[in-house]
Image (tube, rainbow, N blue to C red; front, side, top):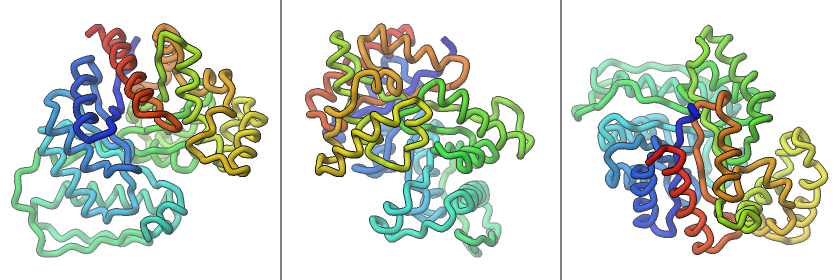
Length: 343
């Protein structure tokens, strides 16, 4: 199998998350990814950077519009220094409501906004140590910096920037400007091959980039247990969480799961919390959209991405689960990673 095996460590505490990252590194995970919602992605990445010494550390994803591009660039340079050049800056737009109501951040037109954000971050990282004037006009993120020269050590003047995307416009943008593309946690091999890869290719063709320019990172929700039925129930809560979002109607319809999604939405509108919809998600829905089951079943489902994705980002289930259940699944996933990598 040619897939690069990577992992998103979980911890009820920061200490446990770092310990899981260390265990994943020993098991052979090449990249350790941290999300941003209940924790800060950059702080989590710093904790893992301090606790590991071989694996790459990446954000998957940090919110692109809730920090200024300059702050994001500074944090990326600090993390790149901490990791001795083994950092990936993964960015995503988030949704409009989160940006505007939770963070009081500007939303704008997300594709154009992301394009300017990435441009500014790259320019600042490349020129921060030179003292050159930076003058970047823009509709969403104009940047004008004069008289600034960063005096500290800088590992690299170019840091890889990956973008999270699932819609056509943002995915095409990744093909144009991204070093890597990251899916959300539900992304079947069929959806990747028939929908996402053609969009990525269109973006790469538009920018005249050769095939292989973009690292294709599939985020795979994974629940593993010797009892495959129990593992599927662990994964069902996260599937239900995504299915409660009406915006994903086309995604579920593509997989012939429109009726199943409708039942989840009905339960959600009836007062069931978004984290507790697993009882309304049948096993066949989990099988189509995740890599869950017994270790052998999970490995078989991971192998289905070989030849289309270049990297798989495995993450444990969390929605609607106790810490004990997530911890149990994580321990078994780490053993599976060691089997996959030969460690």
